Amino acid sequence: MLGTIVNVATVVAGSCIGLFLKKGIREDIADMMLKGLALCSMFIGITSALEGQNVLITIISIVLGVIIGGTLDLDGKLNGFAQGLENKFKREGEKVSIAEGFITASLVFCVGAMTIVGSLQSGLIGDHTMLFTKATLDFVSSMVYASSLGIGVLFSAAFVFVFQGSITLLAQWIAPLLTDAVIAEMTCAGGLLIFGLGLNMIGLTKLKLMNYLPAIFLPMVLVPAADWLAVLF
Image (cartoon, rainbow, N blue to C red):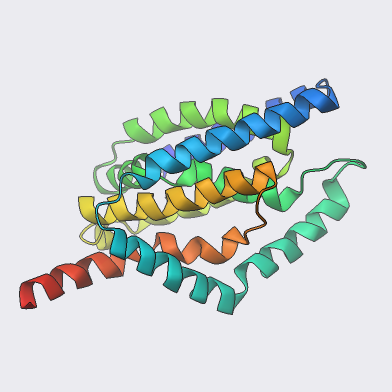
């Protein structure tokens, strides 16, 4: 868990620095920074989505994912929890919600091959090199995101700990499922969600993206199923 702990620490440290810097940024500059981050999120989303190799798996993952997430009302539960945090931590006049900052940062920090492969290496062979590299990148990213999206980015450190830590601790059991093809499709589905985040940040859409979150994990089932069907037919 060393790699994950270091990664969480850099997110917390970077977020705290970003929150400190946020106090000295003019409102118009902060708004432009937010729009710039939206464009960056859309770019990250597009490049991640291009990792996918089977568009049908992506479509099925998104459709089934939103059915699962919508049925469980993941977005409603998160926003209810975030509302309680906002009542305690949100400053008067602040435009960005804690939920938006949390969801945006959580997906940006956790979607991608570096997260999955790095966590597997950490759990299987004790090699934390990739997660240390990711931690450095996340330190810089968390500063930038927190300076625009607020304290929700700091709380995303908890999601990073749970997500990466779970992969690390379960590495021996889930490693056979996380083939290169599965990781590519998981990255693709996650990339689409990050692109949707960018659209939300610009104000073009109001997608309840937390309800789409299960789509990231469905390729672990769908890719082997597709391979099995290809052998049969």
